[in-house]
Length: 185
Image 1 (cartoon, rainbow, N blue to C red):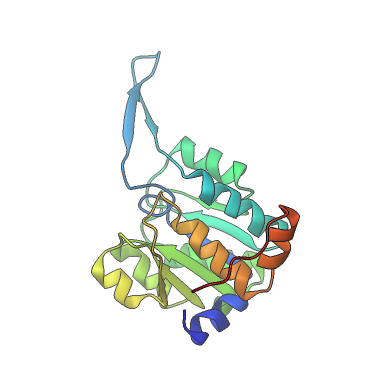
Image 2 (cartoon, one colour):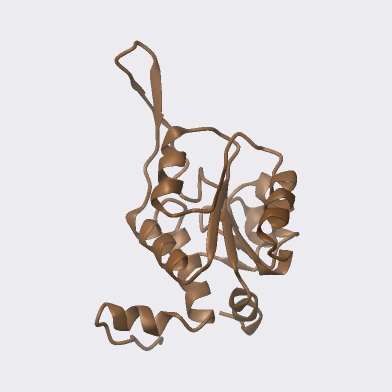
């Protein structure tokens, strides 16, 4: 972990992310519904979910900007106490600009977690760009930090922990759960 990444993470007031490939493993499942149509479903990682809760507790806003629309994403955003849930937007710059205007947060106070080419334009406009381990090579090259965990398997948790540690909140969370800190090797 570089000092530059920790400095960037310490400033974050808002963490935005893509959905498919970040909060999920990129797989989309279609199940038949009783009306004869199809329902799209996705799998979300529970460790990512609790990390979203921790960010919420510490006053760090979160949100998603996704190119696809899915009721499952809306439900996950609600359960994760996300402030922003934008779906059906492949062109993400106007959405980021809208969120910045609504939130009053400066670009350098925003973190963004992405995996694909459509996310790189946002990487260039935020303070902390995080690529997931299974992201495209171009995305990882453009990021300030690349997670060890793949999307849908703890990558958001890893990004959240980075922010919480950099802001001095991690020790307090461990104490809440009666856990002694583990020293890094």
